[in-house]
Image 1 (cartoon, rainbow, N blue to C red):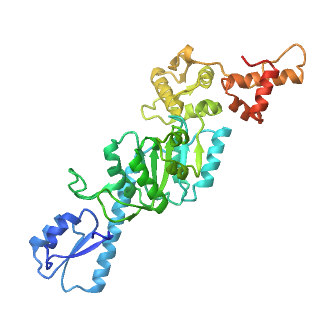
Image 2 (image 1 turned 90 degrees about the vertical axis):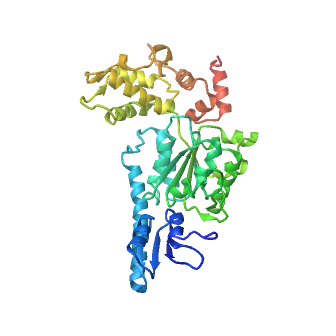
Image 3 (image 1 turned 90 degrees about the horizontal axis):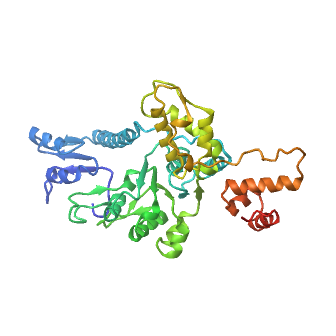
Length: 407
């Protein structure tokens, strides 16, 4: 038992050096136990079943019967595990990625490329952009889809408890460890473990996580044996891990392991064409009253699209759900129902260039107005303007100087 962890135990009630029923009370919660005895009694049978025994058999044992009993005990344990997994999924909203914008299409392309493999994935993006949705999509499109998806918020768990929560611990590993506890890695066995905000975990846990990624094995806190992880790890962060690794606040070797496949989720302001679809999705799928089918007024759509959404999709959802309540019995959600003050709004650069003059514009005028529009849309961020133009940043800077748009 110190060197191995079996899937099932066959345990005699009377052992030369121990009491089987007493051992059952210590081991029955870890794996299925089939009890054997040559001294059957109703009292012992009741004690064994209450102690968690999967079966209680009386010697002499028919080997064919024993084989059937062992198979049934293992199948029951697996069904219990699947039932617990399905219970966790009951009541969860469907994890839908809404939108048809080019940036979101690129995200979906990367998900489709990496999902069928077991490769570790790092999801980057601002807070509220939907990094967990991307993780769910990776899991849903993988061969592990029928196994657990276990999300872990690395910000929430206390640092001193995080290692125990992630890897589990053995009985007596520390003062309050009164019995063995399986960690989240074991809870996700066969499936996907999603580590949200991985940049928050401390160096000691980073080292153990790196070992798990490299070997596929882990060890419980206070344990002496290596266990098979059999889990795919998807991590997410809103922090610059590359900068943190250079500063020494995040292990460089772990970062290099994670960055093997990176998916960057764009902020909502870079996929404005998806905002109206997302808002209607939240209207159709909110968790409270659905007495009235609601729609957005054209002006409300305009206001939503014009806002920069620093809180991204999470903020949009909150604004839409508040608007549903404020609109009351009205079917139309209007501008005044949106909790976005006028000083927080920004006029979006129109999709049609504002050069409708009395004469036909020259090509140079079209170029200047288009560049001016992009500078406004991206708040002067030259790398983003360069990407939209399909040219280098150096060429973009030359165009800005050429058309006198430095200010």
